[in-house]
View 1 (cartoon, rainbow, N blue to C red):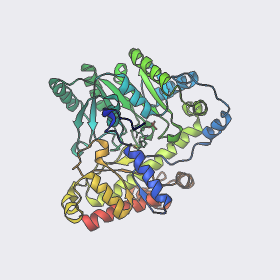
View 2 (view 1 turned 180 degrees about the vertical axis):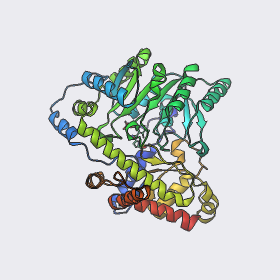
View 3 (view 1 turned 90 degrees about the vertical axis):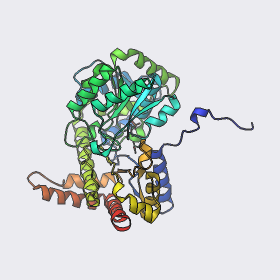
View 4 (view 1 turned 120 degrees about the vertical axis):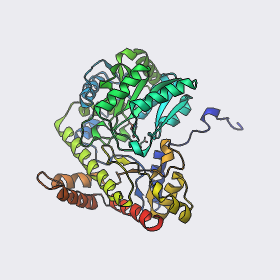
Length: 441
Ligand code: PMP
Ligand code: GLU
């Protein structure tokens, strides 16, 4: 054969920036280079023993599962997620897929119309529309509003885009948010839900960080707009099980036609999620007290480490609200624009991320990966480059900020914890501070 022609609509499709930076960093490290990896968001804690035991116990299970997932797993997942995401409505069906990324893609594929895309948002939503060949209606958000969507802005953009002849039918909302670390409270969600109801917009609510919310409890927008929200979530974040590839979607029973298409897509593509994996995670959806304690500890460590990074960067004068969940932040280095341009010829976030990696060995992701404008000097920093077992062990032995300590004492205990248990995170931060305050400010 002399060659094949790639489908024109897919010629612009690239390798995912998150997976790319992770593979590149792994390769640099294999070659013996030191890299401070703030480019990838993989929770680093060891698999909980109850789940590990489960997987070895079920390694002999080799039958296919139903395409939508094992019945018992779907039942447990539904109860567990309704409770954890504070949804007082049980009219949802459950779809189990190989990661919520695949489920989000399948939902986008199933539902006709243009995607309302709050920019910045997570890296894979837009590339997925290249495959589904959907149009995107961008909703640009900025640092003044902590990159948060509100009902009025959403409504304006829906009306405006319809006037331009567009057909927005679905919105992806993600909170706690990757890349910004921001989350939404009940009043904000109620307002967004009301706008979506008024304009008949499906919300794809990506709540994968729900259990990595720091101090406020998480509530799903499905509580306010149950008939029009599909919640996607999974085990990759609060249980550090990204590599298990198991995600969940709650689909309102009123959207039965969407559920049936998701099931059919599964049946014609991945067939079903791996059987031993489905068995092994049953226990993750039954409020096992030991697992719940582990989730709380891991989230507390993410909270401590993420706020450490945020606090350390404060000396750079980068105005940015304190992260409320997840393990990311999204600082804007605009105030360094002239120095960066004059000293290093850096004008865009891509150039900034590349220059940082080359000169400081700190890997980050540029704002463009999240659908932001190239000239906006924004980077996503992730805060998970540490050994999870070391951090968890130390935390259990001596949790920083025990009850009764003053705020200042808590902070200094948290700083000491990160510097001892997460040294690459501490060093990566220091290098960022030196880069901007030394050479570039
Ligand atoms: N949504 C967001 C915002 C993410 O950061 C990720 C990254 N893992 C996913 C979805 C996909 O997660 P998974 O496919 O592992 O469930
Ligand atoms: N969600 C993680 C991130 O944003 C990585 C995993 C992925 O992209 O699938 O870094």
